[in-house]
Image (cartoon, rainbow, N blue to C red; front, top):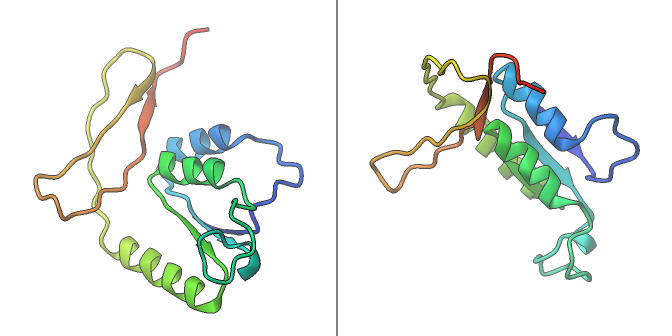
Length: 133
């Protein structure tokens, strides 16, 4: 899933963690492109603000938890670069399947490679069975 947003929450019904849980349960990575003004793009030469105007932490967590990525864009060039990276990444995906343990609840998951120059994006874990209250 690719989300275009200004990053400002105007009344979401779900938290980033809840959205992440739903997306992860159906194996959908979430790629987020946060579109901001060049004046608000922290770290850019045109920025007049040093702090980030969008809640990058929540959006980055949501993307990372699902195996996606967050991109911040303040120009057509940034958006084009983000689009190219997302398409390139989607063309080089691998599916890894495994049989989960029988213990219900959240299980953290870490995927690594032997080669250090590769980038791995994977969801941070999975839910097995029904969680106990």
